[in-house]
Image (cartoon, rainbow, N blue to C red; front, side, top):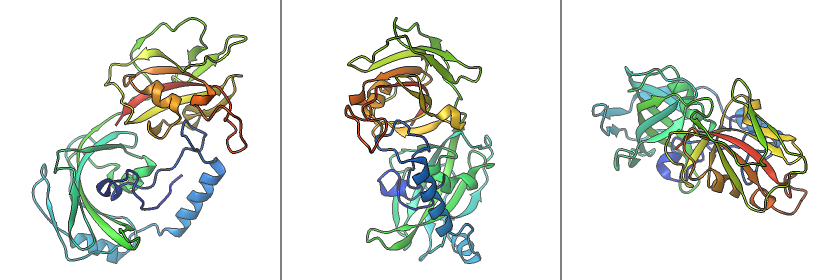
Length: 326
């Protein structure tokens, strides 16, 4: 789904100028509080219906009037008196000559943001802190259409309607420069690890999708089990990061309750916004790894059953392919 709101996803002014409000996958997922697919679809339809889809001639003219001073590779200066647009509006400043950008790539960018009055509000160049995101990620859907088919090195002006500190309509203008793009693998890759005896057995399909066989009479342990099945050679994942992962989740009777494999694309989760078993089980693993998580109910959706979440009170099993961390 696509929620076309302008609230920032990261909670900081600079990132909020480009990011859209995050929304959960249609499945239950490992998030602490996951809305139902029905509620998510209704929100998507409502937001899409309320938001015009195309920039007007006035929107395009307003962005084209922004003066950009400075060469690629360094922070530019933007000059304009004031600006207002009705929908996200993009103008290409420079075409890049690097790798072509496609959905699913991890894109790294530098950018500077100005408010509607032409005042600079922040820049990733300031502390040399470029940001990365997955092209096609719904939280950054304002960037998907403008960047797909462009090349590394591209510079774009993007004006995005948003809300100011007093919750009044406003506009933020960004110049972004794409500095790198890499393919994200579709499955875990690395060295196979022999699991401990007695755990559920994982079998992989040709595409990498996992299935499990749970031993007769198996009971979840009192403590979290995080068994590495494939050890990747990427960087170690920190608890503060967002991971891109393919995963399947089962209840202890072997029933699948959620699977990114079934949806056909990996998902992105902040490890600060997932169930504790994911935060603790994924932290310290390396990118490229596959991990079997056996999560006691008190580290999943709560030890006691309740009507608000059908997974509350359930011990859970996940197989997680850690494709990237950002």
